[in-house]
Image (cartoon, rainbow, N blue to C red; front, side, top):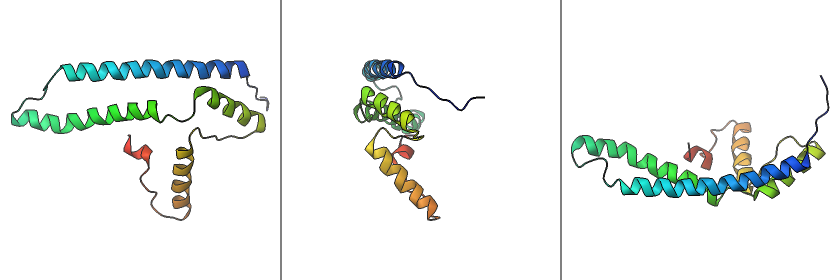
Length: 129
C-alpha cells in the first residue's frame, strides 16, 4: 500500500466541463418534466380518493421541482472553479472542501450545535430530502 495520492489537473478540468454540460441536461429535463406534468391536467380527480391522492402527490411534485431548480440556480460555484478548489485542496492536503458559502455556514451551525450537545437546527439540506 502506498501513501501517495496523485491528481491529474486536466482530468479535473474536463470533469468540471462535464458537470456544466450535465447541468444543461438537467435544466432541459426539468423543463420537459414540468411541461409533461402540466399537460396531464387534473390527474387526481375531484372525488375523495382523488383529493386524498392529490394531498400527497402535489407537494412531492413541488418538492422535486424546487429541489431541481435549486440545484440549477443555487448550485454553488461554476464547475471550473470547483475543479480549481479540488486541485488546490489536493495539492495542499486539505481533506474537506465546500463549494458554496451557504454550505459552509450550514455545516458550522450544525456542528456547533452538536458540539454544544444541542439538537442541530433544520438546514436547507433537511428541507430537500
